[in-house]
Image (cartoon, rainbow, N blue to C red; front, side, top):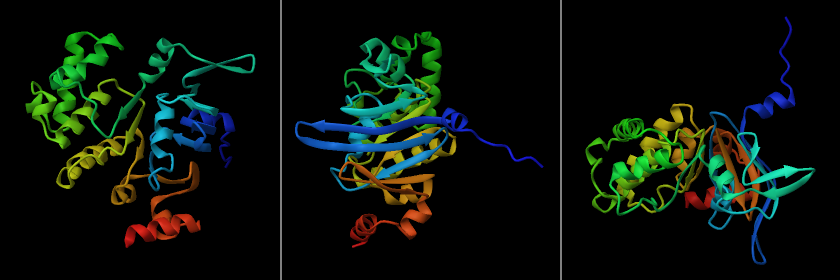
Length: 266
């Protein structure tokens, strides 16, 4: 019986993210020091590591909220924020960046909801303007997602009337309204009171089980153990180690990862 052979081109076709030697500096401080990383369609990747290791900066580069200082970053098979012509790289126009960014949902630490808009208005704004959806279609999608995150009764509320956990669930629903192919989470529970963390993580667990491609920067180690297909450990702007959660937490390969986990256990 013949065994199917997967070519390199076919493997790359399944990739949602490919980072090649990605570098980013702020002044003389090099925050990302040559990141190589690939994320496949449907994969849930949790990025962990100490504060200042470059985790959030890398995530912002994926969405082109930060410009690269070196390397290349592909999302859905295309350079994000740049175009290549005759072997040279040129930065794209804001309009082209927005077009590519429309397929990427991002949830930040501090919700970033518009305080003067109701929950419904926050959710339908981008689909109406960026996707040019009909108002009835955008509203129906918003209602569906609010029900999914357990906030159907808050559709006419303003962000200031919601708890932190509720605001973060609204932020997740807002990102999903664009029907993204990729969801990025930048420490989505770090600004929440401890008793509110669980409600947000439960929504994220449901998303992970749905097959959505997710990259999650997190300090929630139990979530990474339970939900991630792969754990990526970063330190000093580099990917130090990556493996399946059960392998990483049971037997990390590097001394730096071992020291990190031992410190968490203290």
